[in-house]
Structures are given as structure tokens and as C-alpha cells.
Image (cartoon, rainbow over all chains, first blue to last red; front, side, top):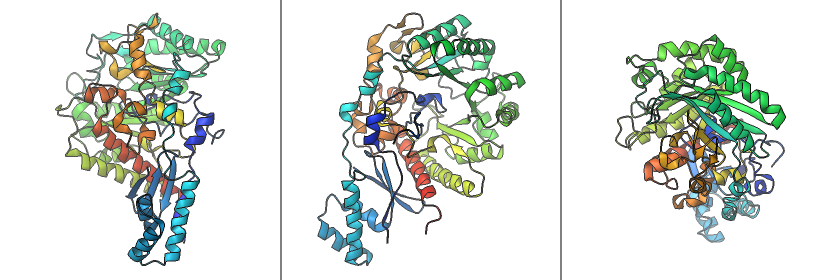
Length: 50
Length: 457
């Protein structure tokens, strides 16, 4: 029996190596304007990085 | 640190510092909870007894947990603190997004408006083209190597200065190529002045359109009234429908605000869906404590239930082939932001600034009118370096309260304006907002978990 199923996620430690280009959208520009969320933003280099 | 929660029949474990998400059975759920405090043999024995499972089976589960720990997917330590501020240091002085307040005036008189009917506690004003042009020049000149620049036309009601909006877009397009930049525009509107010309323009030039609608007619019209006190719902809904219909799949959000009057905001989301809108955002009101619109502690359990029900509704509608988007649940576990973004936050006061109709710069739209936070202006740039530094130093590790929070790398420490309003410091935390955020993230993660395990027994 499989007790644990691990979802595919971006490895945050790995992202330190290639991340930080700053090209992604500013979070408050998209819809909320009154609260802060970062996790729902897209990486501008999606597909290039892991 | 791990975060475990049980939602919609699923046991889910989040490893915040690696970004790992695991869907587990109840045995693994309980063992992960006790793993760090209990010795191996004792934990296996106790778990086997409790669940009536064979020790061998439970041992296999234990070893899976150990394997995940060894691969850095569980119990990961937070090793990012030394990097905090690095992104902002690397990009110091680089501005990539502006919120242009093209109109500090509004044709609605919404009771809950954080901008005081668009005036931001000041005089009514519209932005002259020359000020907006200078703002765009300031943005290009200060954007360093960034290609993508974002400009939001905001107010008040930006369509009350539509001619200048059109001129500014034309000017921006005319300088994009020579500077190697790409402008992405957003328009945030209450819909009152939408006509065919606005629709064609917005659908051609705006990467994103944010349309203000609170949902149910009686809820919307309770706050979103004109100066004669008449509700705006019936006038704007057909215009929004026409705009969205002609938008051809381009990005838009129907953005609502919920208040003490409608903590049961899922009903408002259902109305938006019934009207044919599928890209939705619903935000808790921002106002002073004690304001009749403010959410109360008693509202909280109702709001939490809405978030859970909303997640279930999204899953069921998706199954039926009628999917919709909720802004805060748009979690891309494999393509989301890098760690730099996650620890540096929204960029207010550094890479993102708001511009008043007369050209003053503020850290974001929510600080406009607060003189102590004025950064400078679009001609001289940032002249009050101390204010910029205050925001540059504002990262997830700058807030003591965030250190033990599992969601800190999902929110980056939260909204500086909310924190300032709640505590008097941009480095404070807005506790109610934190509770809502954590619930939203649990729901968003659960949706991803449900989709990933769909069809499995």
C-alpha cells in the first residue's frame, strides 16, 4: 500500500540557483489590489526552470 | 517544520521550505506529525496498534517518510534567511511597475472605498498627459535590464480620464521598441463609462482588465452607488458582459469585495458565474476597525466555510466541464515563483510604485495621500531614500510573527499597507488577513492535490 503520494512541485532550494530574474508580474498588478499573495503568481521562465 | 491539514476528505502535508506537497493516508499523516518527537520503534509499535495495521506495513510507511526527509522533501530547514533582501539589493533602484492614478475622482460613491471615493483624502484631480508621459519615461529610465514593464490605470475611476489613458498607451507603444521594453497594461474600472470604444480599446491594448462587481444585486447596490444613492448593478453588468464576450479569452478578472454585509460571499460568486463570468476574484474589505463594513471575529467562521465550499465548487464544476478561476486559488505548484520572489514580497516601494495625478510617487496605491510615505516625484525620482529603504528592508524575515508560520513562503510576509493600517508599522502583520490567507492556501493546495490524484482509488 502506498502511504504517501508526492506531488510535482518546484524545488525552492533549486530555484535559488536560477531564480531572481525579476521579470515576473508584480503581484498587486493582477487583481487583488488590497492583499498580498505571491504563491499564485507565475514564474516568467516557467518551463525553463525547475 | 511541516504543515498538516485535513480538507475535503484528503490528508495533506506541506513542507514549506522545500515547497513539497504530499497527499497521504491517515497512518502517514499521524506518523509525520509524531516523527520528530518519537523514536522509530516506538512510533511503529504505537501506530500499528492504533490502526490495527501490521508492524511491517507501518515500518514501510516510516521508511517512506525517512526517505522523503533525506531527499529534502520533508522537515526541510529554512536555509533562505541569508538570501533575504538579496533580490532587492540586486535590483536596487530598478522600477518595473507603476500604478498610474489617472483620476482621483469617481462617478460612484462606494461606501467602503479605501480611496475615499477616489480622492485619497485629497482634492479631486485628473492626471494630465504630461505627468503620465513623465511617469512612463521615469519607468523606462529606471527599469534597468527589465524587459516587461507593467502599468495599471487606476483611480478613482480611470475611464473618467479616458483620453489621457489612450494617449499614454499610444506614447508607451511608440517608445517600446527603441528601449527594448514591453508594456503590459491593466485597467481597473467600475464599468460605468464602458462603451464600444472602451471595449475595443481595452481588448486591444490591456493585458488584463479588472472589473468591479460585488455579485448579488442587493449586495453590490448596498455599497456601489452613484452620488444620488442609486445602485450601479443594472447599469454595469450588461457592459461587463459585452466586454468579456468580445475579449476573446484575454485575461480579465471580475473583482468583488466582501464585507460584514456578505461574509457568505460564495453566493456572490455563484451570481457572477450565472452571469457568465469565469475569471473571478473576491477580496475582503480593507477599512478601519469599527467601520460598519469591517469583517468581525464572528464573520470569520462563515468566511472560512465559503473558502472551503468555493474550492469544492471549483472541483465539481471542473468535472462538469464548466471550470472557472478564482484568483487566490491559481496555484501552479511546479511553475510558481522562485525563492527570491517568495522572500522579497510584492515589491511595493521598490520595484512597484503608485503615481498621483500630479506626479508624486508613493510605495503603492494604498499609501497614496499618506505624506509620510511619499517617495518623491516622477521628475526627480525617489528623493526620500529612507522611505524606499524601509520598504527595501521589508521581507518575510523582517516580521517576527512570520517566522513560525507555515505559509510565509506563499505570502512573503503579507501586504505592507494592511500591516501598517492594522499595527502602525509596515513590518507588522494583519492577523485577520493572515488567517484568511492561510485558509485560502490550504484550499488552493487541496485543489491541486485533488487534481493530481483524480481518478485514483
